[in-house]
Length: 169
Image 1 (tube, rainbow, N blue to C red):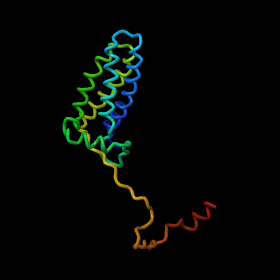
Image 2: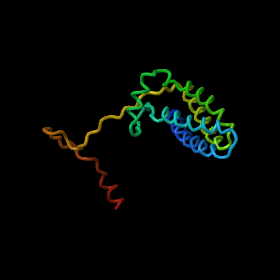
Image 3: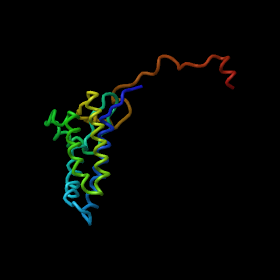
Image 4: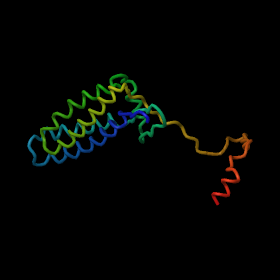
């Protein structure tokens, strides 16, 4: 079995928690007490979405990037360890989810953000760090480059022995 990359799970959880926080904040502005927490939730959801939008690079395999991710990476790359260490995100999310508990519609978003923070703690304990996942430039053609002719195979493909071949039919 391969190792689980907790930071990928935490990133997806944090991005989806921003939508729950935003919806709870919008609902909390109408007729609920502690509207300050609802306004805080709206502002927090925008900031967290911008913070969490770029995906980190996976250890093995390809990393599917989000649209316009390279522009966010250019902004976050100079922040260095402040952005790449997941323990900092854990502390940030644990502190950010406390005010969300003071308004009823934002409690669900607080729970999601709390779970994203816990996942970032697990990622930090497994020594994972954020690295930019720059998308490789893909070729538009699948044929061999112009001027080069690919060689045909030198050996035929393996075939089943005749006895097994007759039994299969």
